[in-house]
Length: 555
Ligand code: GLC
Ligand code: CA
Image (cartoon, rainbow, N blue to C red; front, side, top):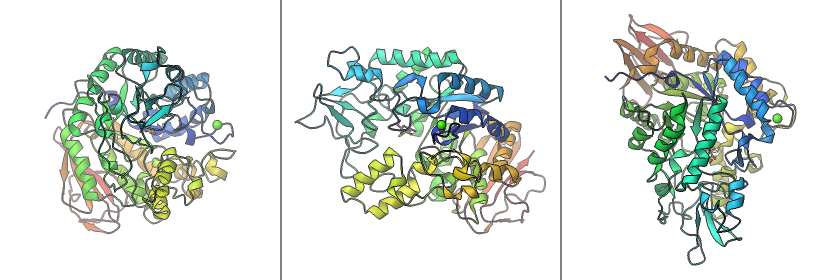
């Protein structure tokens, strides 16, 4: 067994904040930086080490801040740079680090670089973006954007097309241009000098494009897939090594790359233990287990055996070579308990705790998405007007207006998969609008806030919140949870997810029942082992109760 190199970010638990939906301090219905500052005590009570802040930079909000118009300023909705500096200071006083979202695959079309770039073919900023001539009066190739429609937009001023892998207000930067890299690395150094603690890098696997820009395979009957030519492109590792040399290696940072389309082999390069690129990456295999003819839009639930196969494979393959990140949801995914657990009244709490156990006892750095620690559920909006997310709204029109999918089917898919499930306001208490705002929230609050909210959770020793708190304490206390090697158990079971972690002769046993009925299992019947945590007070020997999770340590 190779000795794992120690690092603070391997021992940390990260909490993701989507600022727009976290806490509104001034009654305009939009969460903001002062709202976050007001809840640092809450996060300290939970016990997390790091906040990953979804983007807070200046932005026209076509994609809620993932379209940045000024990397060195704060979005008006969220506050000022003084507010940010205070957040950083106050967070550090609470022993909480701040990791910034870094969105540098693209900018907003309102960024000064793009305003210059589109103004003429000769402009010095022209090559900051990816411009191509059309082909036979049409787009340069058949690529479809992730957010629907063509990935190319014709700009009347020069008659040429620019590439946008996401919305047309998110033009892709041209990383082939060394000046773009200089600008990005300067900007990153500027934030590091402010004292931030790391970067979560948005779609960083997409910054290098295959320069011949070939047509892609047509999957949904409308556009060709750009994934093979933009994900893990030819120069991506070269660029990240350069970034590492010129920025990352000068500071002690947490770095995590969002890596759509990543394979395990690629991950071993991005997150290599040699530290030449990033600390870790987000892979997507376990959140893309079910997909249909129109990609991610489906109402099918993932199966335990598929989930385990993927998770275990990442555990085995990265062992001793690269570091895993662990997550079940984020601002782009439906709520974990609704997707992988059971959000019914009867089983919500117990299954949310079971999922947390299963994830937090694995090897890697765990991420908690705001509200996950309360067992917040999908919102299941039943009207298109309730949705705010550009991806969901575009997808609805693209597939329903073209007759590919029936409206009622698409509504069901949005309810299961749509990103707004994660973006409804954080549920603080049972007062109007869940205590999120005194005004009108920018997106409706989940009506179950009267029952599911932080105030109630803090008052209840058996809440999901207190269970997460305990999982975090255990991770901080026991090196085996951070550094132990992973060994899967019962790998054919259709109902139980079980594994060992092994370190210095110690054995940690983790057993999770993923079903709503009792199962036979004797893995926890070890009289010499000590129970560390469980979501049931009473253990029935040889059995696992519905959604029961149990962790025991044999020293
Ligand atoms: C990432 C973000 C997502 C955003 C997209 C474009 O996937 O997580 O929210 O829409 O990149 O920036
Ligand atoms: Ca506000």
